[in-house]
Image 1 (cartoon, rainbow, N blue to C red):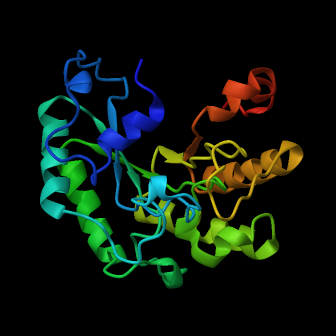
Image 2 (cartoon, rainbow, N blue to C red):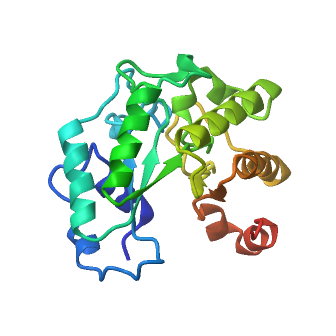
Length: 239
């Protein structure tokens, strides 16, 4: 089985140098009601600066890293293979009206994003937003990534979820990430933050509430279940 990290790396626009991996293309197209999706990254500022040299390709980059021709080729390939959904990791790639200070240089305007979403829908794909609020992958939040579990942090997260939900015209789902928030995954970071127990769940419930108020269904990675399956399945809302 392909590990999720490898899957993301292959599907990201920066790493998608030729086509979508053959392992995906060889799978049968599902029935119309099933999700057949691809994750594409507009933002890549997910990782804290590293203390070791082995991950120098990661860390923060102040500019938008995107090949629009590759982006368009990926979308066309998805359509040709019968996919019906694209999950878009937005991060700091958009100059949000609520928090423009987050945007990298050359970030898309909200008008540019709306036009792109309209194009994607006309291609037959359902666009779904993703903002990763995991403490292991929130470098895109700039200074706010060091304000977790504070009133200012909650305000910013709520603002972004509300604005993105409106930009996507009340999407069916909203991906919140929330993966890899453990010491092991951040062992090589210069700055480490790990929320645990009620603090992690409390922040997650806050994000879930914001998404549901905006009319979408929350979506997260299931990493937490790998270590704490009983707690995950007993505590995760099922609605």
